[in-house]
Length: 417
View (cartoon, helix red, strand yellow):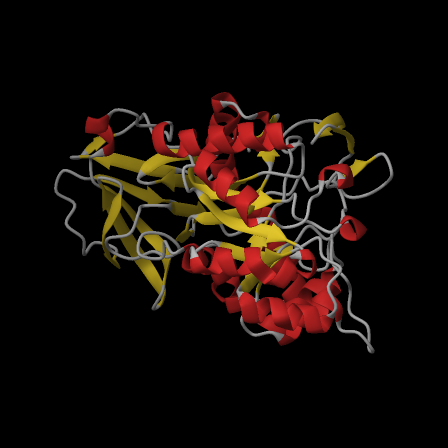
C-alpha cells in the first residue's frame, strides 16, 4: 500500500484505528489529495474533520492544523464521499434475514472495505414470521446498536413479498402476496418506522393503494420483480413509484411493440434505477445504454450482495434456498442468479469502464443520488462542511485505501493488499 505519514501535534501516530471518544474527537486532516466536492475537484486539496463531521475543505497547507492529526499520502489519492448501498442482503457470512444483532454487526463492520459507509438492510421474500423477525431486529439495531467505525444502517429496504411470481428470480414465489396496506403498516410498526424503500409489483397493487400510501408516508416505492406493461408503469409512476429495483433483472424487458418495465424506466424521467454493475447481471453494453438513456443523476449503483461476499466458493443459503457460489457469481440450483458477490468499489470501477466515463462523472451514482432519495442529503452523499465525515480514499487504480465512517477509521488497506 502507499506509504503515508500521520502526525498529531508533530508526533507520528502509529495507531490508525481510534475507538475512544477522546481519540475520535482529535481533528484529522487529509492533505495533498484530490478532493471531490459538489463544486468540482480540488487539486492538491485538504479536508479536515472532527466530532464525526467535515469541518474544513481547502488547499494543502491552508487549513488550521493546530493539534490536528495530519495525514499526507506519498502517492496521488482521490478523496470521495462514502458510498451508500440501498440494496444489500448480506456479506461475510451474514444476512439481514438472520435477524440477529451479530449479522448486522458483521455487515456494517465489513462493508467499509469496499467504500460503503451507509446502507439499507435489505430483506427478501420469506414467510411472515421470518420477515417479522428481520424487521424487528433491524429496527432495534438502527436505534440502539450502531457502532463507531461501522457503516451506518440508514433504514430497511423491504424487497418483497409484494412481488409478481412471473418475475420471481431468486425470490421464493410460494411466499409472495399481493400488495397490502395493512400488512405493510404492521411491518413498519415492527421496524420502528425504519422501512425506507419497498420493492413491489405495482400491477398487482389494487387501485395502487399501497403505492399511494408509501408516497404519502415518505417511503420510496420501487417497481421490481414486475411483469407490468408500459401503461401500468405509467400509472404506477402517476401514483408514486419513483424507483426501479435492479434494472433489467426481474422485470418485463424492452420490446418494440411493448416497452415493458425497462422501456418505462427509460422513458419515465421521475424514475431512478438501480444497477448491479458486475458484468454478469447485465452486459456491459446494457449498462452503457442505461447510462446514456438515464444519465448519472438518475442511476444508483447497488450490490444486491448476499452472505457469500468476502467468503470462498461453495454452497450457501439465501432465504432458505441453496445457492452455489463460484468465482464471480451466485446462482440457485436452477441457474437463476441469486443476488451477487459484488463490492461497491468494483461496481464503481466497472461503470467507469463500461461507459468510458470519469470518476467525477459517475460519482453521483455512488452516494449523492441515494442520499437525495432517502432524504439525508443534508448529512450524507457529498463532501461538504457540516456533513458527516463519511469519506473514502481511493488510489490511482481506484482501490479503497481508507474508509472513514462518521469520522472513525473503519478500514485501512494493508501493505500486502
